[in-house]
Each structure stands twice: as C-alpha cells, then as structure tokens.
Image 1 (cartoon, rainbow, N blue to C red):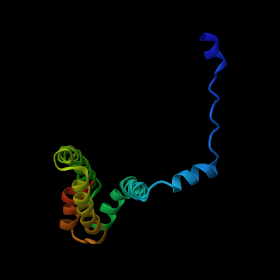
Image 2 (cartoon, helix red, strand yellow; image 1 turned 90 degrees about the vertical axis):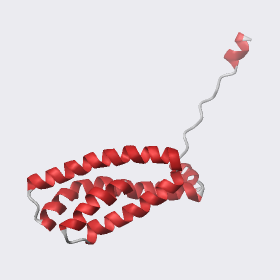
Image 3 (spheres, one colour; image 1 turned 45 degrees about the vertical axis):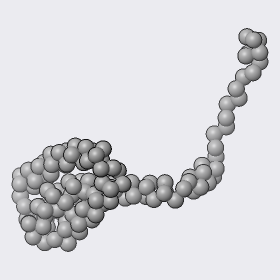
Length: 134
C-alpha cells in the first residue's frame, strides 16, 4: 500500500485565471452580492468618515480642537458600549431584526449628521443614532 500511495500523487490544482475568478464571483447568489455591497458601503462610510469628521465638526460647527477631540473620544467610547450591547441583542433577538433596526437608525443618524445645522442635531447624531446604527 505504501508504493500505491507514492504512485498516486495529488496533482496541484491550477489557480483560476482572473476571468474565471470574476465569473465565479458574478455567479454568486444575489443575496451575497447585496451583503458585500452593503459591507463595502458601510466600510467606506466608517473609515472615510473618520478622517473628515474632525474637520467637519470644527469647521462647520465652530467647535474648538480640544472640545472636538473630547466629543470624538466620547463617541468612540459610546460606540464600544453600544457595540457590546448590540452583540448581546443579536444573540437574543436575531441578526436580521437587529440589522434592519440598526440600518434604519443609522440612516437617521447620518441624515442628521449631513443636514443638521445645530449642535443639538450633531450631538444626537454622534451620541445616539450613530452608535445605535453602527
């Protein structure tokens, strides 16, 4: 049997070409493509917004550098708390329901952040809607 095992060697599978990989990707179910698109947009929002949020807060609302740092630091801490609570809620309620609720709340928060012109709308977006939606 040892000689038979030596004779039967697995041939390495050739790597798919770029065209084949793209075709496999496009043949995924629509649900997978929707999830990947939403994940891409959410990542873009998350990482892209972090770079400009400080400038937005200081320039648009006239908040000092120190106060902006305190606001964004507090927002980061609140995000951690809400993330922990959200993960517990996902286990209790389910992924789909929490995802729909979080997306709805996130839309409200981002709308307030983009179009709100008062510090009250800024605080609501940063400390209530954004952490709940993220």
